[in-house]
Image 1 (tube, helix red, strand yellow):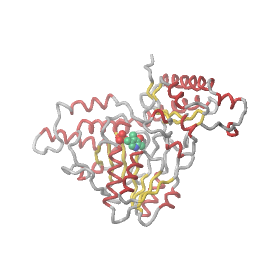
Image 2 (cartoon, protein in one colour):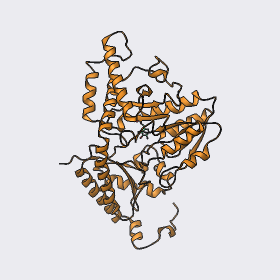
Image 3 (tube, rainbow, N blue to C red):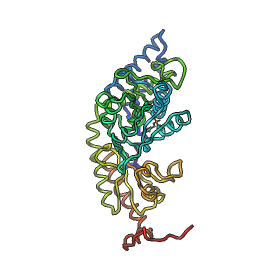
Image 4 (spheres, rainbow, N blue to C red):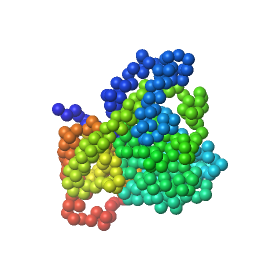
Length: 404
Ligand SMILES: *Cc1c(COP(=O)(O)O)cnc(C)c1O
């Protein structure tokens, strides 16, 4: 028996793996010590657990455990990276380069820094969601201090050409940060091979707990430093003060270890299900995949269904939990700014669905989702005058709509 609704919104958050919870449990009551308490066994035990978790985290991304700064999540990590570089490298310059399709945690931080005197270039993504290294090269100025480009996009899953961009940055002596929240744990991310100086990611997007994340900060070639945004006891090498959240850190460590060990097997299975879902839904007339399909995360699909009204679509597929590019499901009134940046008109952006699969997704759930979406789209089109006109061969672009 299937449990409804089916969860296919794993880019928003993943369920925690039960093995992660199991690892965390002893650190709430039995081993409750403060990892900064140096004088007794309670503290030592907590510190030991954190050290071990730090190794597990570092090992997933090929970093050194000293390069792992624990935060409350990717939002904080992005804030720390951008604001921290702005302050720490103020003498070197004030120009940042980023992309218009970044997560709000990057874009809003950039907007904040602009008010404080930063200059920010927002690169335009192509129709497939990708930027090129040439675009980055053309945007570099003498005062550029940081390029920040997300590893993989949260709405469409496209993977940016990170290695090419980091090679360019390195040759110019410019720091490179990436918001890798959607990529870490899902595809191979290697801070050495990829040439990354700073990287944000989050526990709850990779089967770990909510409220814990990481900022990777490179310690050599070059040695990077960021100004703390939280002052206090000088935890995390002075870059992020505050008593460590030991159970969550232990959970994140376990989540990272599981991803490292099981990624290949998971990816093979999940991408097969994603591809099947997509192929079956592409059978629907006038359905489209949004974003590049070659450079893309294995578990994500973002599709638009033309001549279907956005609100109707999301209500019609209520037995599956997915995210939509439509305004009615988000806090803002605009349809997805990411889809609009790719050149989709409001109509197509509104009629989009994002499917995010996980290691817990089953073939039966995908079967159900396929039929459910097909039925919903067909039903909505039966009621749609636009669809009727399209089927009659009327070019909708030539119609003069009445003003209202
Ligand atoms: C989810 C997400 C964030 C925010 O992460 P939190 O840990 O929830 O703060 C930032 N960037 C991307 C790309 C995300 O997908």
